[in-house]
Picture 1 (spheres, rainbow, N blue to C red):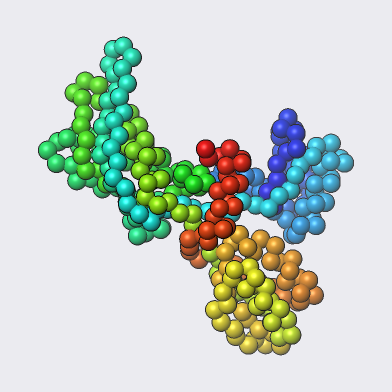
Picture 2 (cartoon, rainbow, N blue to C red):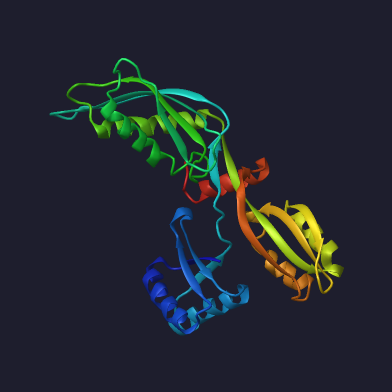
Length: 290
C-alpha cells in the first residue's frame, strides 16, 4: 500500500523506524516509486500492514496513512498539431534565441516515449542544435498535460525555425522545443492510458462463476478457462491494473483461501472517459497539474 506521514516533520523518523521493523520482519519491503511520486509498503496482506501502522504509532510515536497505491497511468495523443515557438530573452550581454517549428503526431509505438525526426532544409536550424531540440522533447515527455503522467507514443518532427549567430545556444533551442511541446501536445487530442494486466487464476470448480462475475465487475475480460487437477479451474483473463488492487482479498474470501492468482503487465489501453475524468480531477486536486 502507499503510505505517507500524517505529520511532515516525522518523515525522517518514520523512515528510521520502518528500517528497524524491516530488520525484524523480512516479509516487509519499502519501495520508493519516484515515477508515480509515492512510497510503497509491501507485506503479506493488508492486515500485516495495519499492524505495522499500529506499531509505528504505539512504539515509535509516529503516524502514517495507508492508501491505495497510484497506478502507473500514461498519456499519449490521438491527433496532430503544428506549432511554432520562439524562445527569446535579452538581459545584457549575449541574449538567448531559439526558434522552432514542430509537428506532433502519434508514433504508433507505445513501447517508447517519443520518436524524434528532423527535416529542416537550408540550414534554418543548424545541425549542431538538433540534439538540444531532442533533449528538450526528452525532458518534456516526462510530464503530460492531463494528469502529469509520462507521455508515450509521440512523434516529434522539427521541420523549420531560425537562429541568431550570437544569441542562439543549445539551451535556448532546448527551451524552445520543450515549450513547443507544452503548447502542441494539448492541441493533439491527448488521452489517458491505463495499464492492463494479464491474470492467471486458479479456483475450485464451485467458485468459478463467482470469480468470473467479479472479473466482469472490475472491467475485466475472461479469455479462456482450462480444467485442472484436483477439481480446480484455470481462468485466463485481462483486467485494468487499477481494478485488481484488492482482488486477492476477494479471492481469499470467495474460495476460503483455496484460490490463487498471478498477474503481469500486458499493455496500455485508452482509459474510459469516466475513469479518466476521475484520475485527472484527482491530479488537479493534488496540485500536480494546473
